[in-house]
Image 1: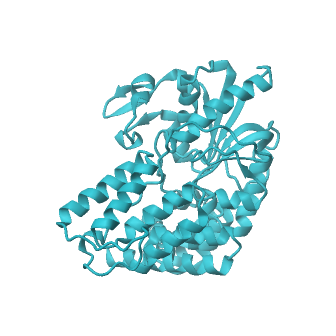
Image 2 (image 1 turned 90 degrees about the vertical axis):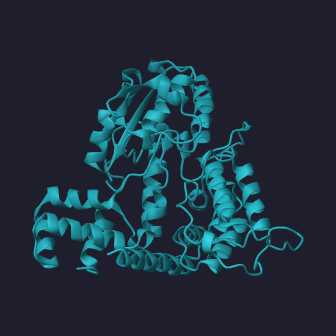
Image 3 (image 1 turned 30 degrees about the vertical axis):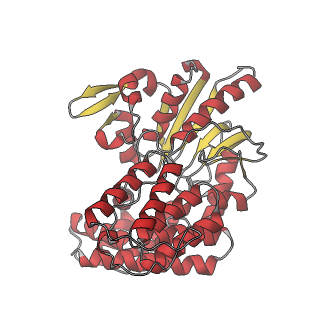
Length: 419
């Protein structure tokens, strides 16, 4: 059962998931969980049950999908949306409400963030409406409840929580004025009839989804997204997906770290606001790396590592993570340089430098940093996946697949070691 390709093919067909993008271990674990839950004795028995039950098909999809989101993730995207929304209303002479789409909307943090950002920017409720779509009915139901725990509030600025939420038991309940701006429903991007009879959207958010598809599915999904986005509209994507859109003729609107693209972009004057990058996992090996000559240097002169206590290294690594997650890219990069100047090289630091370069649009520089991370830690999963995405965007499909296979093997090995 652990390597039964039927389950991989099922998820590919239903939700477009490329097994190489997440690793076989995640899917295998979900299949084991559902096999036990349904009291099936063999993989074949569970497969037969899966084919005959739509409820079980959805249950397996739910077991594979693990929502990971929070309010105002990548805040510059929402600041840019607010500026563009005001300009768009002026263009259409406020003759209709702006139409905004969020998919996948997961448990609702993104569509509600859109609504809060526009209300805080001074837009009236009748001037915009938001639709959130997700393939998971459980996620949509959680979004409709509108009750969130502390994990949904991250970063240094959570003042919006006081404005738009009330405490509710152990969590926070979103205000009705925000909820009323958002409509939520179940929907699948691979459904050719998705929103077929509805007008196009002025703004579409589809972030961190394309990287989980193979190249043909990316093209299929992009065609759907392009059809859903108004000819003068803007599409917001994830940090690692910009090069994928560029390959299909979309262009950045020119606002750093907004991850916003249009069909005929003209540069928008950016404001000095930093947006966070995806939160990397805690460093696994940096504190125990042996002292050795540095194989890489980001400075012009050779720097001899200073032997400092591991606790100092861990403190600086934590600071890098905090700065990156707060969107302070320049400060995070400086902290990475400080670490490399005073400690033995660490794969996680080079990974952060790669990601910082990636989100700023410096693809070649990002590749170099990812490769340095992999020199130090050949199975670093995030570096493998981000480098694979860059290679695929440049047409090196074979190279991307090799890296994805390495990441999948690493995930499988980690999963087996924890049993």
